[in-house]
Length: 114
Image 1: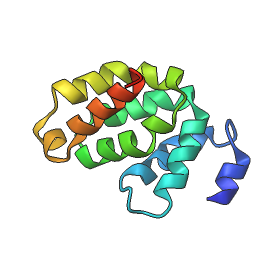
Image 2: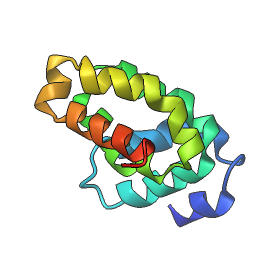
Image 3: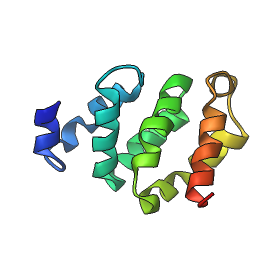
């Protein structure tokens, strides 16, 4: 993992989707450092996170918000507002059961400066 971080972006661009997979479970020891690293990549990772938010894996959405969104620069995180609003106010059943809607509302409050 240290080697990947040391390579940095754009060297790791081809493996960004695989790195994002490590956010599927925040209990994995590698999840938090990978979340911080992916957040440091910034804008190029946003489309991949949108794919997760558009998917059906509530746990992955939860951990992406928890470990990644709040680590982003605010200007980059704001690009995810439409997806966060949808997750917060129109969640699927799995999103509700995994508390994705609550995490999305917290992320939106953070973006609003609350």
